[in-house]
Image (cartoon, rainbow, N blue to C red):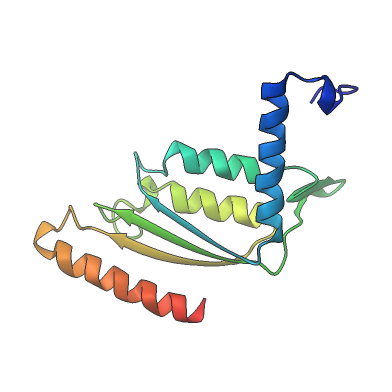
Length: 149
């Protein structure tokens, strides 16, 4: 908001957006564990997930600027990132094309979260003959992670 402008002075539509964003960030800060689930779209995640990540990356709430640079304010939190893709991007020749997990990992470190676990369910389009097995293995690994997460 512009300096000197009070929430009450804004049009209703802007006030409601600010209130909604504040609820989202408060909800995020209060949680101890997070699960992000996404498909890969154009080497990254869908725009709605990017918008959510932008909404929770807020100076003074999830990170702070200091004379030595920014510091993350969220400590002792745990994240599981589950990502599905028809192609294999977590390893091999196309690893540099994957942007969502790398971006999420950077943002989480930026806001102070370093305990990140990942589950990639991928290759079911690239290896169509193994698609059912890939999905079954992904579900099995998800159950195992759920038991310890």
